[in-house]
Amino acid sequence: MKKPQDSSRITSYVISPKPDDMDDIAKPDPKLRKTFEYCMKCILDNKKNFDKELKDLIEKHPGTPQFMNYLTTYYRNTGNLKMAYEVNRELVNKHPNYLYGRINLAHQYLSEGRVEEVPKILGEYMELGKLYPERKIFHMDEVMSFDSAAVRYFVAVGDADQAENRVEQMRKISGDSTATRVAQEELHDLILKQAVEVLQDDNQNKRTPEHIQKTIHPQRKTKPDFVNKEVEELYKHGFRISPAILKEILSLPRESVISDLRKVLTDSLERYDYFKDEVKIETSTHTFPLHAMLLLTELKAEESLDELLEFFRQDSKFLEFWFAELIAKLPAFAIEILGCRQLDKLKSYMFEEGNDTFAKSEVSVGVANIAWNFPERKDEVVDWFEDVLNYFYENRENDKLIDSQLIGYILWDIVELRATKLEPIIEKLYESQVVDQSIVGDFKQYRKDLRRNIDQVVLDQFNLEEIYKDLANDEKEYEKNGKRKASFVKDEDPEDVEYSKPVPEIFRNIGRNEKCPCGSGLKYKKCHGKAYN
Image (cartoon, rainbow, N blue to C red):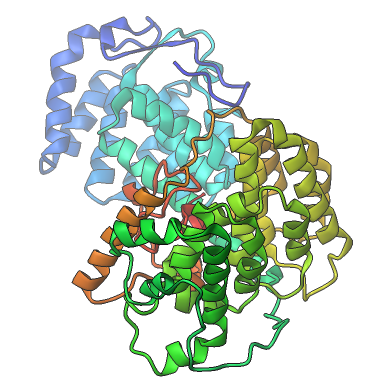
């Protein structure tokens, strides 16, 4: 059996499906086996007035606790809890070491809210091996019943880790049983409850700076003059643009085509009102700035980083208009490649007040990706993050700068880098209450994540042809469904979502940087992962 996290647990006993394998002190009388089977059948069938037969058996076999347990179960199943509790108290008094009597009493206390009395019945550690140290073999039903009660207790006291240990053992013994399903649901209810509590606490302390417009871009309606007229094709096609057109543009003289593509990015700023208010929204007419960003990335046009960052300085409505859900797909590639040798410029952008949360978070992802693709630069990247976090800490009272969500996202990028060097400054940020714990958990959990060994992260590499294929498929789905996916800027808070119980299967085992399976287009960590992590 897998050793649980709690070192106090004893798992040296054997779990057997055969009653005959049990220790002599707990083994039922084999001469009564057929009688036991008859009793269980009658209980399952809710046989009318069967309690009279059981009372006769109890009187006939006073040293056999099973019959009193059957009577307790019969009364409980028929809805007579008063009699069930009364018989079980008598059972515990007469047979204090009989396991099922203890379990029944523990369930009674839990139902009555007398949670603090449960350890007196099931033991301080809620562990069979410590409760019955003289026994080395337990029947699987004993273990399942005991763990069911233990899960209820740990859920009642809010200890999700210990509840998970018991649920895991139940899964191994009988994963498809009703008892396991109920225990899993109780555990999931606790996890969701705790997630919501964290979200509520975080929302009280949540700090999101208002957008600050740094530069006013005069609006116009005329298109720019391009040196290369081929660039105008970017205004006529969505992501299903012909690869031949893209190839032709990329083959133009480098200096002039980069200059033209930079104009395209600036055009999205200077004709924003025109395209928003006067041009019908179509993928064919509203994709040009994303074309320009992708082509500049393909050309490794580092000189275009200024235009890209100016694009990212705009407010959420602007970014939603041009990007929609693609904010979670494309910017990190551009930041990684165009800013690879301009980390100081990216750092200065992170220091700016009033920039969009998601734009800044993608800069963080892009910088982290540099460390993965160029391992020899990891120390440089970690130093970059250290400077950013120190700046946030030094300016922790600045409401125009501090963004608790952003800091949470940055900390996840640091987790994936295993940058344990940053633990001291991260602890200070937690103490200053500027970390959105709904994203990364409390500091105790975060430190555990930061130190945990994980497999090598496999990053998507920038491949222009493959990206256009994926985007073309998305575009086709958009036209088929007649509506866009959920916008990234809505950032729907998990407490506003009605989650089913238990946690839906689609939200289990999702990588933090994978696309959220809900269809929002966001990375999981920026969507439903805020609650389910």
